[in-house]
Image 1 (cartoon, one colour):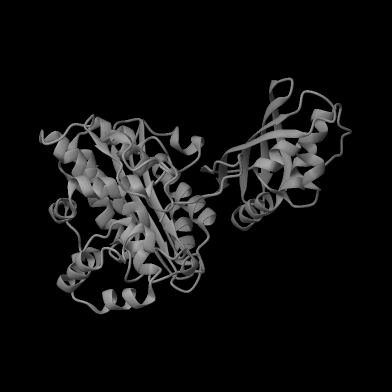
Image 2 (cartoon, one colour):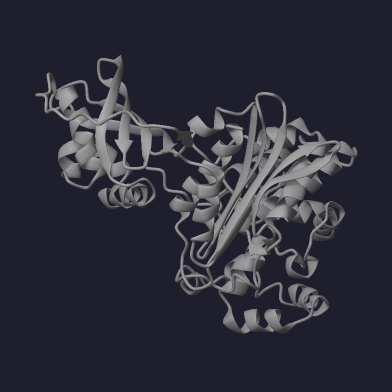
Length: 433
């Protein structure tokens, strides 16, 4: 229920179209220093042709295990092909440089840092962006269409005069969107603050526990927190306990009312809006899940009321989760890309600087992609078989855009890293217009 993109301490992903690539070096040179040797060896490391233990410091490998590094390198290979050569080196310090690394299909910008002393193993590696050779919106659409399962996206230009759809694939199709639904909670909170019913500084007890709550793990239930703190945890790290605390404070009815006011093309699939603990509990309890799936909306609401104990944090059986997609068509938060674009536009029109600041804490993409925009807000969601990424962005010229995409596969897990790279290409294609 939380977007879990592995980005190698390392590897914050950004993509930018590029017309042509620098030519790879065709002659061998003897490295002048051990630092130069590490730069030269990077291509072999990226291609899985060198021992990671010989290249990285022990502390680096303790933070990012070799299997994780290999998995991400393989993901890059699927997306961009083989690493070919280091095309340029720009030194930024005695043990630091910005590299341009040519792949079959892209040019990567990578920052490398080595130890200060021999053997000068690599202590830091940050991929700042990938410039895709000859990328285009047509290629992005084709890559979306080729994803297994079902997928779709929309790009809309937003203004007070109306909304213009610029690009779309399956933009009206309903998808499971995971934690993207938390934007409805943020939108309702922003509306209540704008209406004078609440203040961002209001203090409430946390009061709930849940899994995937990175911000509030093991906090005492009576911990006092502001609404703004809860909202920031909910959006920036997708903290589920913070989300459920806000759902409790605002009320399920109020958040569902916000969904209705904004507009949703299939409210029968979106309602009742579950808390995250209810979703976990239903997915982990096959008998209760089947009752819920067969019930009408009214009966589902009655079940949520009558089965509170069975739908509590303590009743969640984690052994039933994590083994592949579970009921992503029935126990979920559903929306089409266009539905989510409506939500993003509502957050723009509410004109809450605080809400927008909260959305900008975690950009969801690498710094190279986010830096192309005056404002860049994000929320994503994921669980086995589900990934969704949505952006509210303002161009340097002041134009607003909603960009939302989802990928579902009820049969198997989806590749979160590949989807993140695809959505980053989409974001970059809009920034380049």
